[in-house]
Image (cartoon, rainbow, N blue to C red; front, side, top):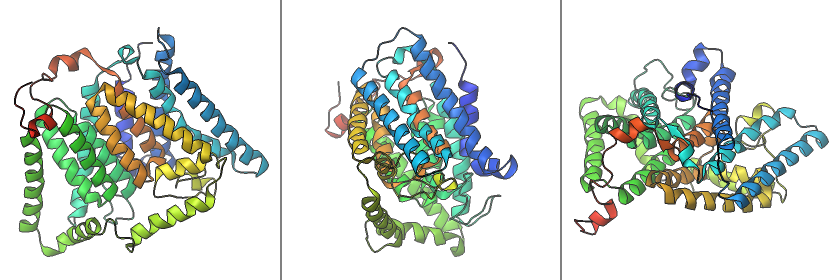
Length: 407
């Protein structure tokens, strides 16, 4: 099945990064979230069909059948609540969260079957993330470029601050993997400034975790980190030097949020502690099934919100879900980390994001997370390989730090 999925993927990326604009101008919330969700699922489905139509081997049969059993388990638990407790049948829609993992598992060891224009997709993500970041930075600095400044509403071009923070993290990952140096530098610096503007500590720490993991184990110069840090410092200095004092209030908020990141008395941290308490109160051996956690689920059922996607996943699957999650994520993390350094670095940042954020329960963003992983697993198209710089130009960063100069 040789379908060109580049345009559907690009459309999906554009709509996902511009959910606020779509919602206001093209039909409301269900269009803003529903259309990207459907597009993303279709892309994941065709990747899955491509694997199954080709000569492939299930390299991890135990993992595949274990996950298939888990998917059936979650489905049955959800159906039981719908039938016995008269829950809304629309809960079944939230099984979408578990579908892309099938594609990821079947792609393991079969990367050669996929040839995707990764550079094009990475540039598309970087472009729209940069565009949204510019709006977010202007909001952060006290301007109003057409979207609300209210931090509890839209941020950047996204429907919410939490969504924006996660999307900036994904954009930062994609921008750092672009082969064209000028675009990589411009996009990554603006997007990281956009991450700071989100005031979301999860996004900031996830980006730093990704960047450090990628730089330490890939072939970049030590000077890259110095250049990046100095560039961010210069941008902050220029803002302080040229902008009126009234435009700098959010800098104080950001600084305070970073300084009290681990203070239990901080209101936002207290909310996380409350989520932990609620988690243990609602934790069950068999779980509650899909569609019972997260802000989207509350449209159909009195959902339970958590400041952690991992906690929400455990609540859905119970003790069995906890065991399955540990086994599945450990296997996938170890397998994919051996394939490409950028996947290892991405998963490092992503796992941190999953622990401290509930934004992955937003439909379009959840699929965006998996779609980026699928794109990173797939092999490069011929055009990208020809234009990619030689991978052995520099030693891995950690060897440079130790003072080694030659391979």
